[in-house]
Length: 141
Image (spheres, rainbow, N blue to C red):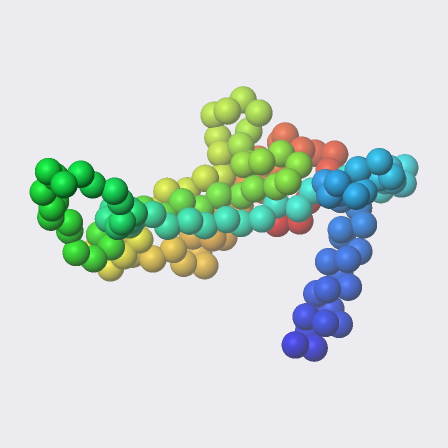
């Protein structure tokens, strides 16, 4: 709690002062960064997991329709991990050939689990893209 209050949050407020503000109430009076400051872009790590049997369970049916058997459990999963920013969206090279997106079949009977090593590998790939296509911006990943 002390780290969050006295280290992380003050550093976050300082970084936010150098980012684009997309809120409606600040759209008109957005100050430009000082000439000595570069624009800072914050890139967030986003993970989503989708399951084979993930679907709506309740729906309207006609009287003539018979029940359809449904598989039990969630089924196999597909995880997608990517880097996203409010300024640019999903992270990829401008040439479209490389991206930071990772597809992963999570689970003990699949590819295992997304570990810290996987996140570091993805972050290194993201940093390579950022150095090439966004050289004039400070970034926070």
